[in-house]
Length: 555
Ligand SMILES: Nc1nc2c(ncn2[C@@H]2O[C@H](COP(=O)(O)O)[C@@H](O)[C@H]2O)c(=O)[nH]1
Ligand SMILES: [Mn+2]
Image 1 (cartoon, rainbow, N blue to C red):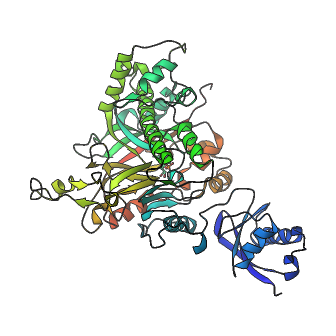
Image 2: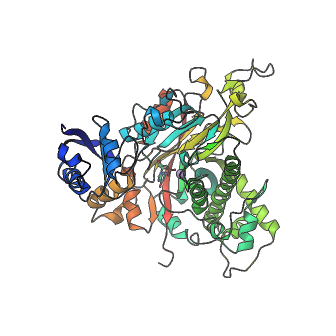
């Protein structure tokens, strides 16, 4: 039997590869698997420079090679590739062959990639294309310019499907999103050294907010209660780990009529459904079946739970804003509720809580979910309406048909994972502005979605835009590379380099490096891709002054 040729690649970076010839005597049914495994792992150590390789996956199927049968199946395909892992699970979406393809998969699914200037990782493109062509029901996929690789599915991506929903595509942080709130401060109160004082005032915003009954009252909206249960509700009003943040920004270039006024100060809150969303996803992926058929009992219940988590996430952002405003505008009575009382069983009358939540809405400029699922009319089109059709494009685009379809072929489920919507689902109207944040050290652009015949009225961008600049380095890489680059200067990463810089509150050492501005792509490259593709305009700009991630309040 001739020897078998294959390729080894890093599980976490498919661009690093090396060839390997397996001698035929290692593949006899009577052979032990140990020499074969050792040869592969040893080659990975020497040629791929992987320090401690322990697991081997078939890239085609994503299956870990454990038994003799696994090995023979994997080596049957000429030139197959094995992904070598240092212990982590398989990264990416398996490319199943035609025999295994789901009957509702669409190998011809159109994939738009709106990227030219922004750098994009090959693994993210592979994840985007593989997901679009293998999961059932896919009708369109779009890679936004902030596209980057996820564990299995990409971030900065939008997938539209018919007849199926896929909970893992939007991930566990259901309802994560961003909201801008106006504050009563002006730039003179946050520029330069003043920013340090403002940062100092941001205390009492960690840990559970007040008592159970007050939280329960806060978690009521126009649809009733969106409580998740004591365990999860205790975290409402908290920012959470990772790259969630609340940031005080100066509006450098405002946008008339939107609440973003030049030289005023706004608060950008980025948070989601905390542990609650993750607990939902876990239940729907526990059995390994990740796609839900439309109309099945499981899908209907998932959609209900997902909707509740979206509402919870909004209530969370509003409560974070209340807690921050209580520090920023201490004399304002409406925000007093944001302060924690000494005892957990103290109660406030429900009226006060309802009033405070209403007051927060008055300060809100925009609030979007960037991890969510939505049923929308497809393909997007203009509704010909004699009342508006002669009054110019602006009037026409407010009539884009987004959620009105009834027949099955009229609508799709848009899955957003790290992608902002271009319209307000509640009022079914295009959104006037959206935040496009860069990082804690770079501007947040104010962008306006645009619609035109050339973009298929939103088809090309799947009615979505980039939600940020996206990572240029994985967390792991940022931690090791930036951690050693700034080894003796980590404190300097938390202070503004110049008058216009940012005071950063981040009492978690690893997060300082993982979330450093250098770990993100250039926000201007992302915006120029959106503008060139004809899906957005840049209409204004904010700059960060105080960025709050996490504070050890005992200090
Ligand atoms: N203005 C700030 N922007 C930030 C910060 N940290 C991250 N980011 C940007 O937000 C998005 C969020 O991405 P998500 O996938 O976690 O939702 C990210 O792409 C960055 O561009 C910050 O501290 N301040
Ligand atoms: Mn997010």
